[in-house]
Image (cartoon, rainbow, N blue to C red; front, side):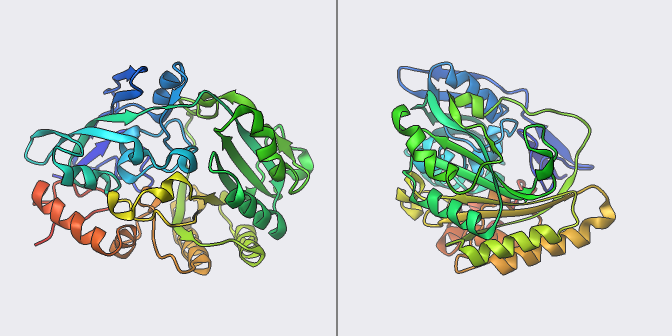
Length: 393
């Protein structure tokens, strides 16, 4: 039988569910034990990132996850974890101290740098290929008041290129996410902006409180903001526990890639593709990386893209199944025209794109090492409903 492992259920390609198979749902495993003095936490993997962040935030502490509160900590951690603190403190896995993992033969193992170090290496970026992670021990950082929030700017080739340049030049205490898209009819946007191309940016400055305004000032100066909600706030405020529910569940045709730069010409290409999309919503998400993430040696974990400079995720949302081919072609063409020298991929953002793109997430010796570890802990490939790494042999 096919086995699906569900933490938060955010797999965009359906890896959290199985039609006719077994779903191991961890969402009720939500225990969280925080050692505020020692700055560590043991967290069960059914917790969402928002729940963890809210509880840790009551102590003025944080571990960096992604940017969506309803994501389960299980999946995001196993794939690496790129979020609001990535430039200051690195990936989520850079704060992973230990884990409890149930392997394919039913053993419950505690893994860390001294116990089953090969498995500990593999689960830091290798996804859910090696077992069921039931508990994580994380390092906590002192993160209380930040300068952050949403900044919306008109999107032009110049403004996009300038935003990326400023994000790259900013101190590593600042992490940014720039969503280039057509403006939805949000109440805080002027009506004349609705449907126009915008940069909907999220900024988090987790440095000295007194310098926050000066650090974000260059972004405010790129163009006259359409909306400016940047302000001092407690870290959990930017990272709510849960987003709104409802019955609207569009599907996304998405592609992810790393690029070295985004100049005016590349920005113009981005705008042209977004303008041409017929999806209910189309977005190009741009994240400047570097900082603490890049200081960890590439072979320390199974996440092999420490030196990648900018992560791009392009997506078209749609509702009707017969639209799939149109939007998949759009996303593939969009990613292809943006691709530069870096052929890598972030496994947590991969769609159903085939083995070549999975291998791109684990280039060179990383792939071979992961396959050997897979053979040791899951030789029959029980854990295969994922971005699969087949066992060697």
